[in-house]
Image (cartoon, rainbow, N blue to C red; front, side, top):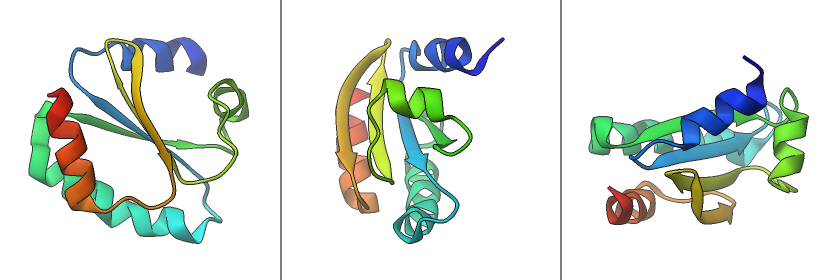
Length: 101
């Protein structure tokens, strides 16, 4: 299965899927890692969190018009519900995701 169709099947989930478009060389992206871990620990299996390296997945980043990293998106049932670039704090992410659980 190619990455694009795999991604499409992942975002079709009936639970919220938080996507983190990131790059290895990006300082703010490194700051997001513990925030995402904390968010997952708080919400558990009610959400999925995926990290997508824009350098390794350029077609996907282009399709979703990711211009800067980190760019975070929330999908549910294949629909994009939210998007923001930059670091988002754990409390804000948890509050956002709880709206869609």
